[in-house]
Length: 258
Image (cartoon, rainbow, N blue to C red; front, side):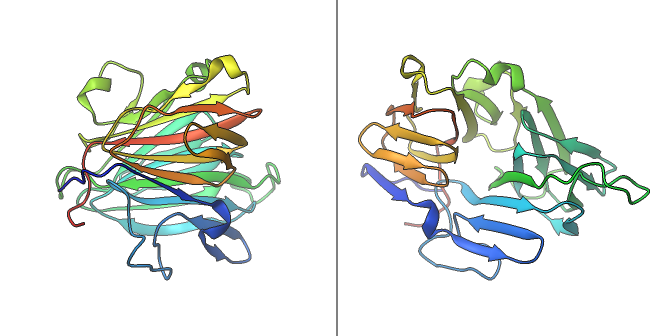
């Protein structure tokens, strides 16, 4: 792993994201993903995937494999059923953080939680979520799964640590990831100007506007789907122009290469 020394702020607008659209899925990719490959847009820091997905009722991702990746899923609306080859089976909904360590290899499926086992509809709401992948410290770890309800903490409007491998956040309410240089924070903001949040000061940070509209110091207005990649700069104040939700990755290393 290497670091860069020149401060840099790079704004990526939501409308410029790569897209995958099929009958049941609307997926927007912040970085190269699947058949969408751009050699100049493969990662930032240790973050390789930031996909925003909308899956229709009765649909989803069938069983498929992963390995050597820390995968964090954050649901914005609806609910998502997770099943994996380790026997984990659960429903993920807004305010519930979920992490899957792929490690030596794991099979899992993710489906809209809209159908009962007898095939009748439970509801007809799409599920809307962001899935993020960061690189673990070491390959070949034991696969694992963890989830944690943090909806109450988010009501403060402050940045809440959702998933972390950084020692400094060990005592905070968060799910653990096997990446000792990374942490994900979420702020669910009301729009009260007195409840602005300050970004962490880190070599690498990725700010994603999952809902609403915000103002970032030194950047200006960011709209839903926009992202900012920060290098060697931090501490900017973010204020919401109404209800908004931001996802912030704080990273203290990056993949090797310039």
